[in-house]
Image 1: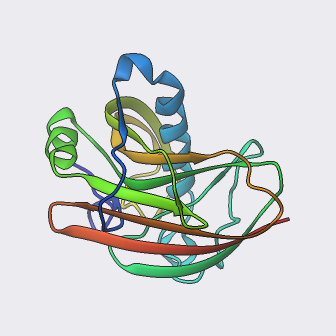
Image 2: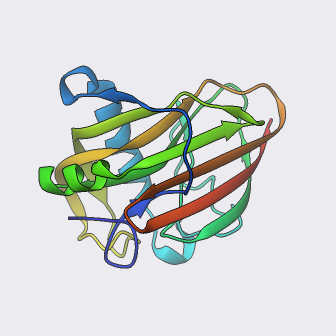
Length: 191
């Protein structure tokens, strides 16, 4: 099992809120690919410059793909981040996520819950209970994975935010699974 923490990889934030729509592996191949891309993004930097470990948002622009903008939870702490997002980009952010084997995802998702709000409005969340993903990690990555490409199941609660209008926005993510909780607040500037 891989949970995002020191030896574990889990991204979360605490709270309750609107239920997430449940998605099966058969109906969510696009999100399987997106989860794999997100995990590859998270595994592209060592902890010192990793956007997941970043308390301020200083590293939010590292390794961003050209078609979406990834944001992150944390390794189990609170964070207040500022990030500039290019105008016209969809934002993809896990409220709570994990990769591992089927039993890992089953146990994790049994108690997973979370919320996300943009400018005080609750976002519709998607819940994935176990989607096949492929992840590529660089040497010395913050996830503790060996360099190379591997397959796993991705699970979690995710938000996809259609490209926000130019200007300032507040994004709040909260989620829990078991006794793991993270709270992340983003001050976003879309320019």
